[in-house]
Length: 427
Image (cartoon, rainbow, N blue to C red; front, side):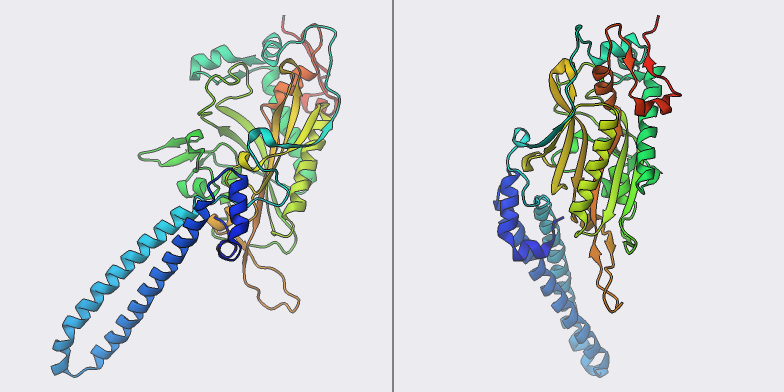
């Protein structure tokens, strides 16, 4: 939910943001009117309720012979209060619905447009070249005995897989390497729930236009399977006033993630690029709104340190407004070069959600004041970013492959594989 004061005082700013995202600017006017109607209906209800309370006191003090005559007025006023309360509730629901169509206001400088309108900020590393015909990650994975898509489909259906042998070890090594990076930079490690309540999923903004991507256990459970530990970590401090006096709260959530991949029929069906289940270590930060943009750059820098140490060629892009999730005010993606596709593919995302999620989940902090007097609470800013995930195996296998099907292990990863230097083909 966006800041209502911003909507009321700077509607043109919100209109420009909606337009940059490719949304209808009329949603802003509809939200302003719905908010006005909500406030008007609430005022009418509260005025009538105050009148009812005052009249009740008057009746209580009236002589016995006059009370009977006042009964009809009491009933009539009670009915009016009931109707006003219903109107207020309906106006509140309508306002919530209208405001729900306003996505987070983008940060100045975010490129307008859709998926193809990103701005490339930089490229790092040389794209690998080979003096042999390069194999794709699935063929390499099968040679190594690391990936088994066929049995994954047999057991669970399409877009499922087994990581086995060195494949399983490789993923665990990546996650442990990322966890060490997080610990070195002040993140608290967390193993998070992968099933969350509807209000948590809604609060993080994942039940909007992409709700069909989310697995839902309905009927008795009414729980959602998360597509990222961001969801659980955003809900961790729901309805709390957190202490930021010593700086940001930083968490690193390790979880299995689930995505239906609805709408991606026929895309990336080969291998483990686009799958229904994967593991991920996600950075999540609660900080002040003033520090959020600097924290965003800090998360990107940590991601780049990981990818550089793994010897991957990549680019950093500033994602266009129309390709942002509803919660993100700005998002940077890092895409690694995948040789057999001749293209960059996303390995990490990191988003600055400003106060959008915190308003929905009511996570606040109390700013420090010069005279130490109690300050009014403010909503925190939340940020998230990938530090390692299963898809990284794709770029690693393809980038560091050799002619015989073996794969050189990047030096930084070797300690997490017991010193192993080369992944050898299975006999």
